[in-house]
Structure formats: structure tokens, C-alpha cells
Amino acid sequence: QFHKTLIPRLPLEVPRLRLFYEQKANLSLEQVGNLQRAGCMTIQPGIEALQSDILGLINKGVSPRQNLALLRYARIVGLQLKWNLLWGFPKDLLQSYLETETLLPLLHHLPPPQALAHMHLDRFSPYVDNPEQYGISNLRPFPGYGEVFPPEADLDRLAYHFEASYPSGSEEAPEVMVRLLDKVWRWRRAWEQHAPALELRRIGVGSFVLMDTRGLGQNPCFYLNQSQAEAVLVGGPLGQAKANKWAIRNRFAVELDGWCVPLATSTYELLAEFEGQALVKSMAISSTP
Image 1 (spheres, rainbow, N blue to C red):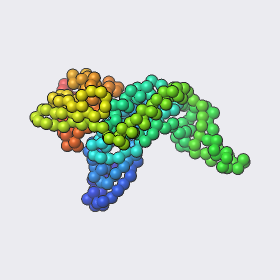
Image 2 (cartoon, one colour; image 1 turned 45 degrees about the vertical axis):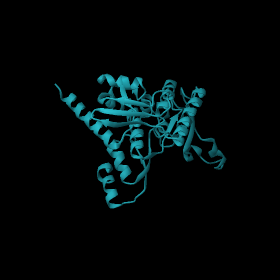
Image 3 (cartoon, rainbow, N blue to C red; image 1 turned 30 degrees about the vertical axis):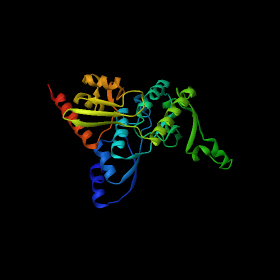
């Protein structure tokens, strides 16, 4: 409830506050805006992956749509993000990382991860508490503990970090992970050097321009109508509107889990207006007998 009770009061009662917050990634545009206004300059969201099968595998409780939305919202309000892409999960599939590799070049206008990092087996995690459930065997303390504690120490009780054996598609394809790491660093360099844009602006009633400087080899300026603007800002179920497939085809959105997931940014006010209109439409559709 702190988004409703605490955050809106901070800029009024504790002005000039500067906060760092660890935060789940399922945030709305309004919540991200409120965090920024409250003095949260940086948050660390638990994004970890951009594919639903990996997020489901680790019981993350968020969808790829929510993760990508947070990246867009943060760019719009100027909120800094500290997040990582993780790999090496028990029972993960190589295909998930191949799909991520294809996705990353489309995201250079959004805040990049700090690193591509191997996941840790840590005490108190489900992997350590219930290893058999995840196909994990030979769970053992990280070797460094043996160099620190005396020989008689019970390392199984002392250790926080562990190693183990388990099936993993990413572990078995190091060449793919090297390529993915290169894509992450290309994203970071693009962001640090010139922060590309994929930004929608209104130029008239029902008329918009989309500026695309991601360097994908296509026209950097597109003129859009209302339905196209909705697709690149809000998206929705893939078959809900013709413009959704158009947006995906032009790489202004991506298809994930049967949805058109938008990638473009805009002003806070314009996106709030479009999301509000989309909510009204969805409520009308759901209430139609």
C-alpha cells in the first residue's frame, strides 16, 4: 500500500529527498511518476529476464510486458534503473535466450541492464531449500569457503553461496551466451554514447510523428494515424487491431505471448492519455454481453 499511502506524501512533507529503492517490476506509469517526484532517483527492479518461460521458471510474478513497460516508463520520467539479465537457471531452454538475442537490438532507446550475469545459488532460495524440485543435485558450498574457514568448520551450515549440478540449456551453449553478452554491451554503449530514441509526438488532431534513431536501417521519421499511435504506445492482444501487426512488422512493437507489446516512448501526459483510453475500451469490451 506504500504507493498509495507513503509515496504521494513524500514530495510534500520531505522535499529534496533522494532515495534508492529495490522494487518489483510490475509498476504502472502513475507509480513510476510518483516515485520520481518523491525523490527516487534510482530503483533496482527485479527484471532478470524478458521471456515469459524464464520468468515462469523462476516464479518471478511478472510478465515480459510489465518488464518492458517499466523500461519505457523509466525513460519517460527520467528514473534511473539498475537491473541485470540473468542466465544459467535450472531447466532453462536455449530458445529463450535466442529470442532475447533477437529482441535486444530493438531496445537501445531504453535503459540497458548493468550486466548479463549468471544466477546464484544462495541460501534461503527455493533452489537451495528444495533442490530436488528443480532437478538440482550435488549441492555444495562455494569452494572459496574452504580457503577461509578452518578444516573442522561445517561449511554446509556456514555457506551462503553454493554450487550444484543441474540441466540448463544456457549452460550447454556458451557460444550463445557470448553473443548475448556482446548484444548487452552494444546496448550499453549505444545508451551511454547518444541514448537513441523511439518517441511519439502529437502534431495535430489524430496525427502523430514517430522519431526512430535506433539505427535499424529504416526511415527515422514516420507519420502515424490514431490507430497506429495506439499500437506503438499501448498495444494489446495481437488480433485486437490491424495496426498491432503493422507495429510489430516495423519493429515499433514486439510480439510476446500473443500480445503486441509496445516499445515507443512519449511524454508522460500523452502516454497517460492513451493508456486511459485503452482502459476505457477494455472495460467496454468486457462488459458487452
